[in-house]
Image (cartoon, rainbow, N blue to C red; front, top):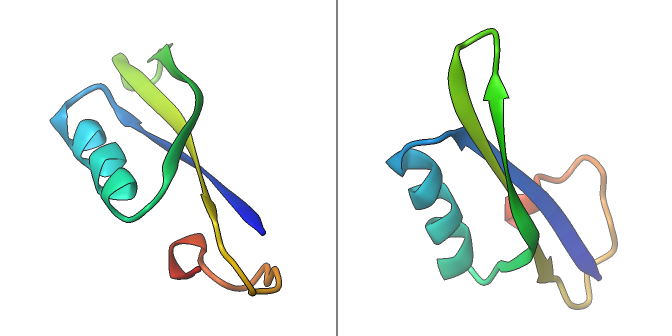
Length: 68
């Protein structure tokens, strides 16, 4: 089964660390990153989709994606 997550956060080093951590845990980048201005917080926000194959596990909507 291919599982999908969308990571998002402020445009700062913590977002880069979040993506790097996901990559180190076996997730792969999926598509291009996104970048947008958040008018409420007056900050730029980043997003990146990641995917990972979870072999021999049925999908469970109550399970956290990081637990696959």
